[in-house]
Length: 123
Image (cartoon, rainbow, N blue to C red; front, side):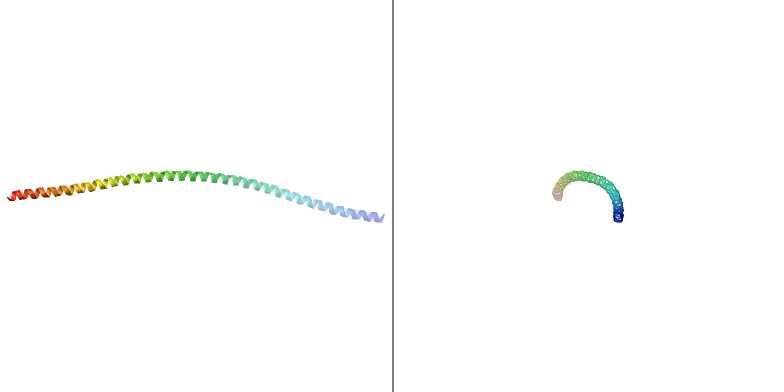
């Protein structure tokens, strides 16, 4: 009987230790589940933020592409305007040079006429 009582005490002690171990494991499991729940919530928040950032990047790329297209159009337009202005300036420059030559020719002819007129009066 004493051996059985001792065996019962030993088994009850082991049972108490096992019960305490189960309680500790359950507490640890509960803590782990809470941490997992928090981690899942944080993951959801991060995934939502990632989606927002991906959308922002897409929008920015689209805006950049639009701005690049607009820039290229503007640059092309400016180059065309520059070429047109340069052509007009060149035409005006040639007209001015032609007018200068005509003026010099007229002045020369006027001087010749005046010289002839003076020589007629001198006679």
